[in-house]
Image: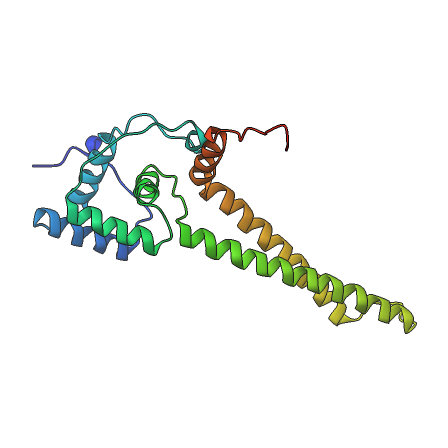
Length: 200
């Protein structure tokens, strides 16, 4: 019996290795190495995947609400151990797993610490290079040189690259620490002001 081509979907641009991967997935899931079967399943799964309202990046800075959940004690102990290794609280560690699933991954404590420290060291290096470049320029001028030598140009170029890199890292940190920064700001606002005595 001839197939009804009006109900067929032709897909161009699929490399042989991807087709082979689709066949492997189909064999594992359905017992048949049929790439078309796997593609139909993926399309159907995608069309019926209703995840509800989309979470925007700005939503992460909104006021938080408390909720509770129960977990088996060994699981909770494992989470606490992993959170401690990652320099994070238990709640924040669990939260990062949820945010990642929502498409807005957040850095854990150890990642934040490493990036901030490396950025600080790079910024110090950039400042030192800036001082070296100024001193070098003064020596060139004092020596009667009218044109900056190649080494001076390379120092200036390296200084620019460091500045661009540290700025980029700061932007990434801002995006990946929204939840942490918002929680810290909320705690600071909630902290009662210390009453001053007349003697203060």
